[in-house]
Image (cartoon, rainbow, N blue to C red; front, side, top):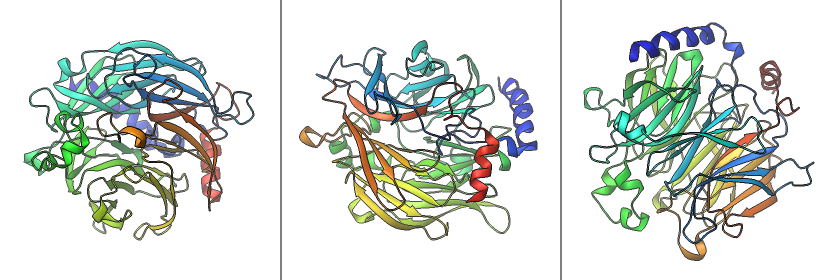
Length: 440
């Protein structure tokens, strides 16, 4: 199985590595292999939404919002596609051709594939129900496109529902090509998984670590009071040879490192992550000897209060970073012009809780959603469930619209993805993107 993967990947990645100028990113946080980059005004927002008991049809769903200010439907839900049941809807990812959106559920491990070639009306085209049975992994979390393939990072396993897990590589049609365990004791790793970030120019893939099904499906209040459960969080990141899909080094990053963001500025070869439990920003960068190292470079808020950093989003020019902290409902903007010394320069309370952040490629618009996990979200009146859109002028966030997902009968708003009509002026070319970056 691995040889089949390697032969195709080495060829595809070899082409990319030989011509790095052909790469681009999408919305500043997706795979560099995704085509049709949204560089102008995004037109639609797809929100992967958790079903909620007593709200609407109570089912997980893909919600589409019109986010084009020129549209008569601006700031309104224009489409909602329920997929049946509540399986802990979580993250999504485009295929490399951007035609399909893969979405995962952390509880029942289903993967739903949507056709978004008509982005105003996504269609469900396939459901992969055997992720756990075929692989022994549970909780498909991150969906990361590479040429003709989708890499899926699991969070748990079928043996003990703990944090040991692995990566599965699929074709864009949903057929398994290979699977790869996360590095464990033999490399000084904990075998946990969470996010994926690839730097093709360095032939390097980074993975981070979170926790297993037993923890992420537990009530948050009970979890933090359980000293045994609190020990079962990841404390490492892994460096992989991307073409070989082989881990080559384990980095110690204590406190559950979550999202991985490579700088998108040409010439930069460093990445950032944040640690949920220790509230720090970590820099992953090569040292003077050419070895990948990780070091903490900044606190996020007051670590003693455990604000629980969650999603982060790097600006396209590699000079700024949004960081959300879930428990205090706050977003923070860091000046990372000196990547060794990030400085918080702005903060704003978005709500009682905030989780995901997505910014436009030009950095002028920022969107927030609130749900983290069904059993970790706040209770009662503090259980905000919304999508909020803001303009950002570099100094202040100005709210443009807000959608209350509970009042709309939709559920818990989680992961966001932009899209635009095919051939839209919002879809820019690679050369335009890099010319813009180089001019900044």
